[in-house]
Length: 258
Ligand SMILES: Nc1ncnc2c1ncn2[C@@H]1O[C@H](COP(=O)(O)OP(=O)(O)OP(=O)(O)O)[C@@H](O)[C@H]1O
Ligand SMILES: [Mg+2]
View 1 (tube, rainbow, N blue to C red):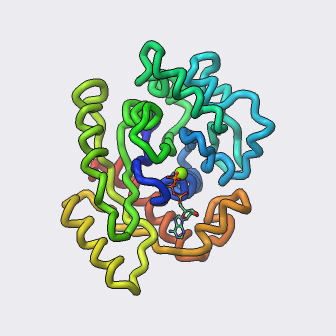
View 2: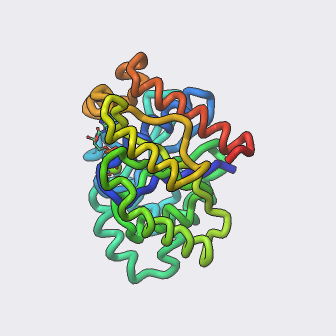
């Protein structure tokens, strides 16, 4: 059974997709069979891995509608042990249709349950909202990985996400856990960044990853080349950070330290 991790924060632009892609890549590089599910209609995780979305016939849309199994949407990447289930903007319309449908919250879980044995890790990239899609991710996952951007309003709105997680736990997924809070885009030269990091640690005692992700232009450049940071510039600070994150994720999920 795969360990399913949803990368979630309803705030936009905090580094969810960057984290999903590069964590998935380094888990794969560590020998773990890894599937990255792009569950955001923006489709950034798909394009960030060099997927040409115009050629796709089966995507996460067909999977959540129930007309195709997850395996039919999965495509291999150029990287060993790494697969991706891509998404197009059509998923946004699907979400609206799904609102009327039966078992609308557990569509992703149902799809993953069938395919789960084929992977060690399944990483879900979520959209920037507490939408039906995000809730599907929370119900399908064992763990939430919460990227938090080291900026002034970092913690604002997180209460709402934690509340949603509580409701999900109560209603449908009792085992859901916060795997860890990941400070992203940290600039250790600025006092603000350092202060926010301290505040995040105070707010989530014991739950903040030891690894932090620095602000690193190479991380922002890599997606336009359709490759993870470990391929684009493996000696960059960003690459080293995500490699270390993968190691910490493996320890927290397999080593019982979570
Ligand atoms: N550590 C970093 N250093 C520099 N730039 C970064 C870093 N992490 C992410 N970025 C850039 O910041 C922007 C937002 O990142 P990303 O797309 O990963 O966030 P997101 O939370 O997935 O956004 P959305 O909510 O829209 O899905 C992107 O342009 C990305 O390349
Ligand atoms: Mg994103």
